[in-house]
Length: 130
Image (cartoon, rainbow, N blue to C red; front, side, top):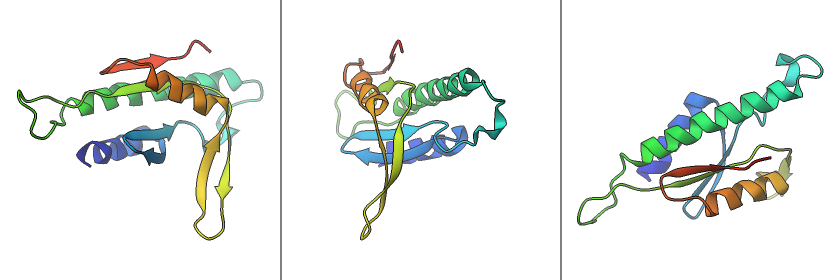
């Protein structure tokens, strides 16, 4: 609970959108809802670069914040070690459902980011080559 609260604060500081928590995973995205009016036509590279740098700064802060959260009843006392995965790419998003609508993000970029996290080492950030 403490860790995800810290991550929520980081989202506010970095302008990152929290998408959901799934089990022990915290899923977020950068530049997802950012207006492209800030960029001139043909500046897609700058948009992607800004997203990548923002994601990396958020990821570094996530790893640092996790080190301040102690695992309950751990002997010797240990801090939480998180794995972070980053991939930059196009996604499809929208609102699903009518009774309990939910904003969802889909696409190979989401799947690849999840694979980066799953194969990362504790306390590390893994970034795709793409």
